[in-house]
Length: 271
Image (cartoon, rainbow, N blue to C red; front, side, top):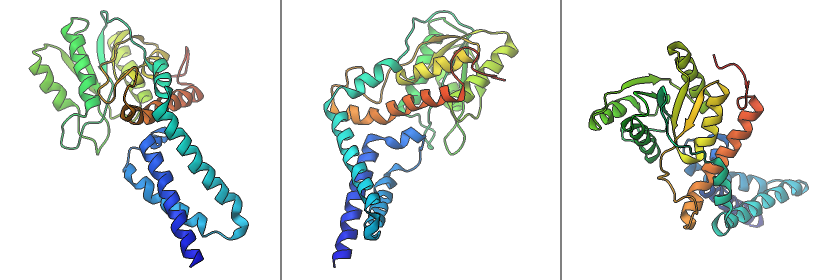
């Protein structure tokens, strides 16, 4: 009976840890975009596994308890402190729009029913606004690989709705911002272009701009509006939870890109 009770307790504590990780969006740190609802179930199995270990494995059990405690403290910090606002501010790079050779809309997921997500809608709308403002006459977009739906049909339809006489160039498929920077820099070399207006989400704008500059492009960062949460003050706790995973993902992305040598002047070949 005692062993069964230990297994149930371990599974319950693991499920709590998994749920906290799910709410905090920590899977974003490793760019896992699969079914995150599995996190509590997987963590429950791990918790039960730790509980089933022999007594000499106390160190592992203490480690699991420390992880749970750390997640609980982090969850409270996200909800009740200005942590998200402080994480978000340095990630935003917003510059006044000016004339450029082309507008590039960075990729965002399009639903499998071919309807846009809020991020893909906001990014494309910003790109269309820049074209309508006369800042460029070419729109460049990129496609994500399957199973995500294609961006191009919706982009072409919106160009017609906005009655914009602009060339549409489609690149890809791409998997990350670095791929987009390489593909766009190749296109610009072929056409003899130099300057690009980048339309992306505000929290992604710094990494995007620095990635494209590392490939030798002149960047004007003109992100769209943030539709997924209320920035910059994050007045609602639900917005802080919604944003935290993406903000952690961006900081992790900046660190990873620097480690790979993909940011900064002369950051490497972009062929």
